Amino acid sequence: MNNNLDWKKYLIVFLITVGLFLTASYLSNYFSNQKIDQIKIIQDNIAINILSSETQFSLLQELSCKNVSGSLLSGELDELGKKLEWGQENLGATDEVTYLKKYYSLLQIKDYLLMKKISAGCGVKSAFILYFYTTVENCSECERQGIVLSALRDKYPELRVYSFDYSIDLSAVKAMLQIFKVKDTELPALVLDDKLLTGFRNIEELDE
Image (cartoon, rainbow, N blue to C red; front, side, top):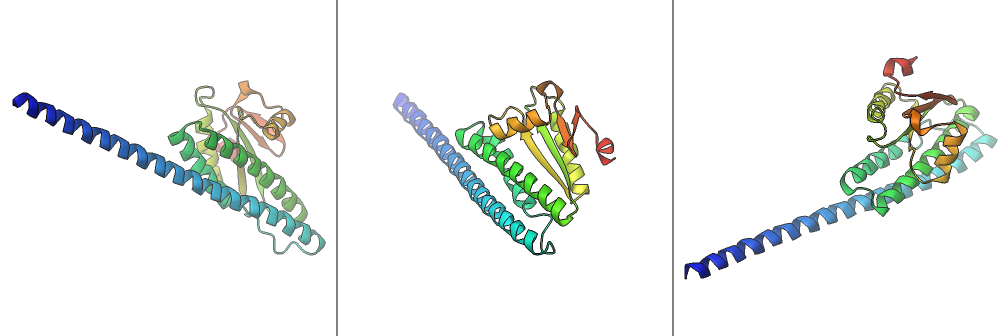
């Protein structure tokens, strides 16, 4: 009799454990998918805004620069960057995250070229930093450099920082690595005014 009760008790505990595990897995997948959907919506909005900004600039070249904004896409790019960071930390290198990371890199390059054009053509006050990094395992100072750049961007609203993973398999990023002669043995690497700075740089050095 006791053996039957023990068996039923173990069975109930087992079923409850399985139920909790399946529920947790379902909720985790559900919220992960929700996050991916949000990222895709943001990237689509940025793509539309880039096309709109290019059209706006073409029109203003013929007319006036008085309506050009110096922060066309920075807010949405920052939001997408934060969501991608969450995706990499919580989802790992999934196909969706890798795809979005590539798309984000292309959007950054597009925004960089567009803002340089606007800065030169319309006299908009802007400063640009291209930041090349890789994994913590291969670059012990990259994470620290990212923190310094975030602090610098908070200090100077007109500063635009574009971050690129050295190891990403994307021809546009590889072209930038060749243009600025960035090597994987010299990361982190920064490009300011087309000048390459290698190794970790503190906020005082960059301030100057």
